[in-house]
Image (tube, rainbow, N blue to C red):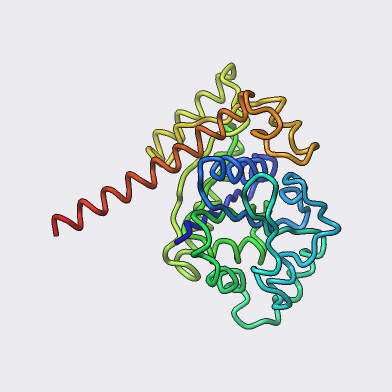
Length: 266
């Protein structure tokens, strides 16, 4: 059964889309069956996978309002994973969902028939707490939080954690924090190092060991419609996301082994 992760942060420009696209490609390269869902009307994750968003039909929009199914909308990318694309149409879902019963669970219901087809489902959420993000959080098992190590990011993280508590209390009791990912990392900055240390002190092993550096090739890859491992596999950005994918798989295996051992003792 698929592990559903919402890649989210209410602050923009922290690397959510970059993480969703590149982690999907790297997990796929490691033999995992992956579905990536673009929940942002800007459609940047769609473009970053080489899909022409204005030609992509049906999209997540049609799924959310009940005009299509996941099976009809998903597209196999040339990088080994599937994508549910998005374009500007998705902005209209905000208004239309208001009048639909169970509007917070539309995505969750649409995903359920296909969860056996995947090992991971990654959702690129928009940088706002709107109905699209709420659908992602209601469907997810956990959230992955990309963030820069700067002062304002810490303030935003406090707000996000409060939001997750409300979602867990009212919409999705299983929701947890999968991990915090330090992105756009500049080790030369004293402030960056200080904030990074505060994150580790407060969140412990919820902070991924892998750090995503500032990297020119990582920034260039989307303009070619490719994940960075397809654009420049030897770049520091590609190596970092491959390391992150392996860390996530190692964590999953460790939890599975611990659960198996606990079951044997019971």
